[in-house]
Length: 291
Image (cartoon, rainbow, N blue to C red; front, top):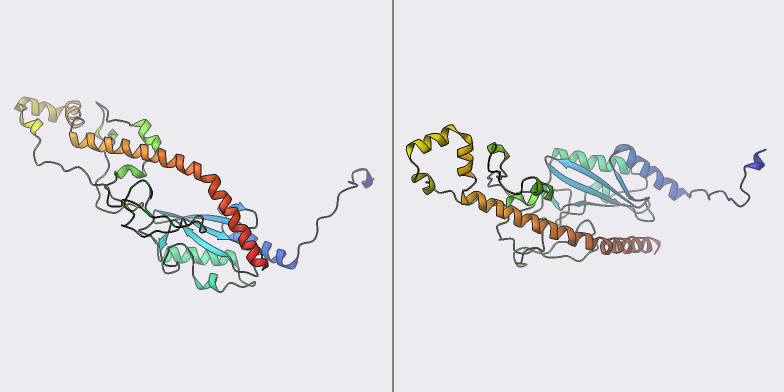
């Protein structure tokens, strides 16, 4: 009675070619070795996020049409400094990728790359600062390509000598929770950045406002008033939140949040353009492989 359930117009799928079978084995190996890998485009593009010593990077794996006859293209984003990556900080140039053959194991190659990253942690390339087009001094840094889409023309970073608020890395949700310093409460509740002289992951540092050796506001207070301030936290906080240095930090953070929102809007506007160009790249890779 199987004829009752058969589809008259259905046709069996064509068998996979030998090259397709080998490609599928490579993809299966990649997924088996890395459970958190994302499939951006089936059988074409894969992305593996990895965090190494507080530095999160994406390893992008692009499979040409004739893969594994043609070797894969492995890139990283954001740009990093490492002996297995080219001078641009984007293309992986390790021997296992460079000498890839049909008998190689892609999953193990990526695993070896990760092990080398753990053994010798990469550092963020200095040209990978955030907000590259918000500021205005292109002569300071050379242009670099957007590594998420290597076919895009390079763009220049701008006004890198501008002091940028430390809270550039703070999401906009933080601003809604603490838009201004509270009049009362614990000191730990105040949105005060931690001073640091180290360069952040975005390539910029925040210069804390200069603190004076003395506070004129306290000079006018009497001894009983100073004693009361030392004994009562609310009185101390009221004096603290009115410091001009703290107000400057809060104003800097508000300016930053506005820049983040503007950048997010520009990114959303660029998304369809980048997707279109990515498809053009995939088509060119396919044409080059067939040629």
